[in-house]
Image (cartoon, rainbow, N blue to C red; front, side, top):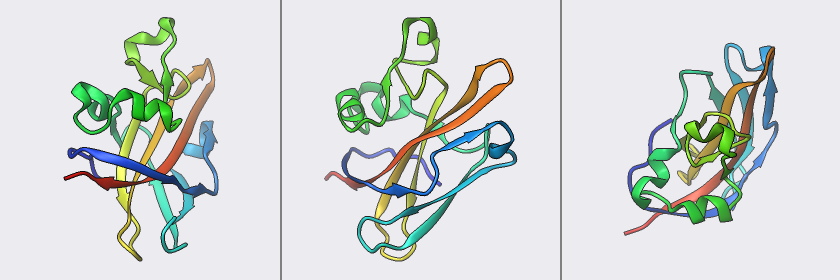
Length: 139
């Protein structure tokens, strides 16, 4: 799990075994698998609430990694509703949104995972994985 600091282009979206974890399903960590788009290797990811990931704003701030339009076009995030704008311009389900990079250990393809975690309503905490996309670093 790492942050991404170079400009990237988004490729195919990987198939996820499970993308939504409610309340205790995410404690101590949400664990799911995704299939590599290049070699079909099944990879496991583990997301620990309040420990995993980096703020999504790092990706689109000043278009350093990927412009907002790229995130929106690929369905990675949505525009945040006005009542939750304090979380940033782009979120998943109007909840705090994070990302991380990971690699397929079999073929070394690079992936970006985007997810949100937070209290949707009193007593309902949701960890929602928007998806995992293959990416290429741009020169």
